[in-house]
Amino acid sequence: MFDPRRYQDACAQLGLGRDKLEEMIAMTEKQPRRRLAHPVRAALIAAACLLALSLTAFAASPAGQEMIHTLYVTYRVVSLDPDAPQPSTGTVTVTIDPATGDAAAQDSYIVWHEAEDGATPTAVSGQTGVLEIDSDHATAVIQGQEGTQVQLIPAQTGTFRYQAAE
Amino acid sequence: MTDDTFERLARAYGDTVFRVAYHALGSRMDAEDVTQEVLLKLYRADKPFASDDHAKHWLLRVTVNDCRKLLRAPWRGRTLPLEDFDAPITPPEDHSDVLAAVMALPPKYRMCVYLYYYEACSVREVAQALHAKESTVQTWLQRARQLLKRALGEEKEETRDV
Image (cartoon, rainbow over all chains, first blue to last red):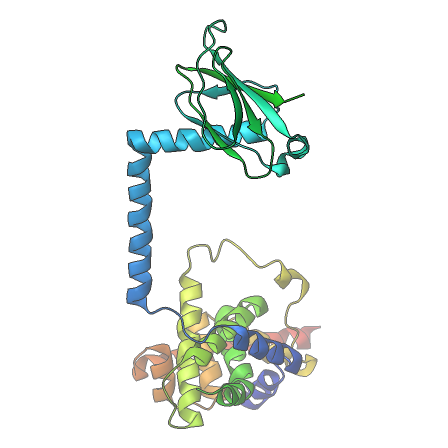
């Protein structure tokens, strides 16, 4: 037989416990009082979707591809072993970053460019941070200081290489 | 709502919210999660409550809604919190049979029994909290009593046989 009083006694002993409840109250009070209203949240989500679509469209455009290519090559040049070949077409930005280990210890670097056939040197021109350019040998000496950025523009498709200057 | 009001209501009705959630879900971990969620909703509620009773009924409705949402979740039924194997709720020994019998009922009957017998809600208040008709609540209560009578009667028979 169901005895409501016994059931009430059993329920009275069911609970979170004082410590747990205080912990929950404290946790709740750490939360911000107001959440964004539904319309604002929906607008933000829509804006994020629109931004993602725009970025995708930009990435597919020639300008976007060039930008991505530049970023990619910059990252690769900084991150990889100086002796490793670096792919490049068009404009390449070389960034000296002390986080890459020994790179920061050097005062300068020699950067050169090889055409695809490996034999024909290609012309290199540079802007800020270029100490010396040897157009005949398609080389440039660039500063090895932190934050130096140099734009090297090869005349044709090829491969960039660089190493610490002696 | 001020922090003081929130703390007072949370201390007064935190266990009530937990017990409703536990009756609905049958799991301590889930009940704690729902309690935390309901407290957060109380904290963020910007409407003033006319009285503590008003706040209590608001909390009951919000708790029931949150439990329903959790019960409807597609992953529920296929998973069981690992903690439930380690830390089940152990009711006091002398009343474990009656609580176990209630917890063995279907969730809607459990919540009905709890709100009616423990929270002393009227049939109308239970119906409001559970979004059901008063006649439906009366039927649920009647069926729950029959099931409990059968379950507790059989238990007594078994005890006598031993």
